[in-house]
Amino acid sequence: MRLSRYFLPTSKEIPSEATIPSHQLMLRAGMIAQAGSGIYTWLPLGLRVLKKIEEIVRQEQNRFGAQEVLMPTIQPMDLWKESGRYGCYGEELLAFTDRHNREMCYSPTNEEMITDVFRRYVKSYKDLPISLYQIQWKFRDEIRPRFGVMRGREFLMKDNYSFDLDKESAIRSYQNMYQCYLRTFNRMGLVAIPVKADPGAIGGNMSQEFNIIAETGENELYYHKDIETMRTQSLDSIDLEKLQGLYAASGEMHDPATCPIHEKNLVVKRGIEVGHIFYFGTKYTRSLNALVNGPDGSLVPAEMGSYGIGVSRLVAAAIEANFDDRGIIWPESIAPYKVGLILAKSKDGVAIKLANDIYAQLQENNIEVLYDDRNASTGYKFADMDLIGLPWQVIVGKNAASGYVELKNRKSGELYQIHSEELLGKL
Ligand code: ATP
Ligand code: MG
Image (cartoon, rainbow, N blue to C red; front, side, top):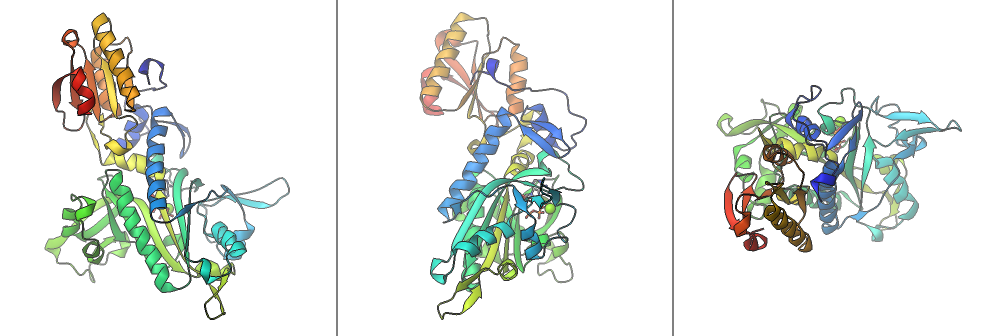
């Protein structure tokens, strides 16, 4: 993409309504535009990141045996009356009536709706286990929407629901998603710490949250220092059993009186909740009468779990974990483009020719490139490129005549002088 034609409204000013780095940077980098309280339009650059995160989530869900569905965003309230959550989910539920005076709501979560699908089609234990997920917009009328897409009212969530015959296999489904989540966040270049969590409005008895460590996180986390060490390891070398056995809790789930770890091994940090897994048994299958035939012929309610990932929140959380005073530093797997190509001498014919050639070559080799071909000052271009945080910058300027360019790593700041012919190999 040529920047001269790209819709990228960047800005130097720190927007006064934004108090945390990710919100400021997403506005300044032209990723989102506010449409209303807690509601955002995703602009081209922001949408590319959202789609990359969505795709990693999808691939990992599929890898771990889940099947994608797509449920509507609007639900009939009858289902909520059946499940017993009507009236007790609270003000976060956006409810309204249609022209025929039927009560409806905008989905804040979909346990009822998926259980309704399940009960209509699944009749036998032979069809179990089943794991269905969707990546769909949700609406929660948050009392205090803030921090941009971090706590929006409309937000994109991956929600998965598992159905099993008995508790034992339901726990296996839960463990399967646990591992899936570690892999999912790891692929995004993020380390999410699993902690014991409060099951909240969904209810249930087993629940863990995945948190990304960041000073601006809303959760207070308490965990064993060995988890801190694991945070820096690659996923393959993490001992999953050890990880699950170590103490980690969020907020009120932490009780100093019963905390099993010695003070000197306890780490207290703030975190952003990016995922949440629940096992809640038959809470919804009982109330909605979702029964299957067991091996002995008796009718039993299926055992359920639900598993959320905050896809749109992750865009902001990834920034909170990766930025400096010049802007965003994208992990490569979720970066909107891999390379920012900067034409540093926009009036020099030789430099223009070389930059154009490199642009064509990168495109031919399917390397995602954003080409700053604008007729603007070099300082302005550098500032914009650092702000939007693409992992690699290729600068074509002073040594263009001899075919040399500069390759800069956004994260480390390292700068290499290389010949344009070596560029492809290096990238
Ligand atoms: P929180 O405690 O942050 O309100 P929650 O426990 O209500 O989260 P879940 O119901 O578990 O959230 O939803 C699954 C995931 O959706 C969360 O882990 C989070 O990443 C994301 N999420 C929840 N609420 C919002 C929101 N208002 N804006 C953006 N993402 C959200
Ligand atoms: Mg909430």
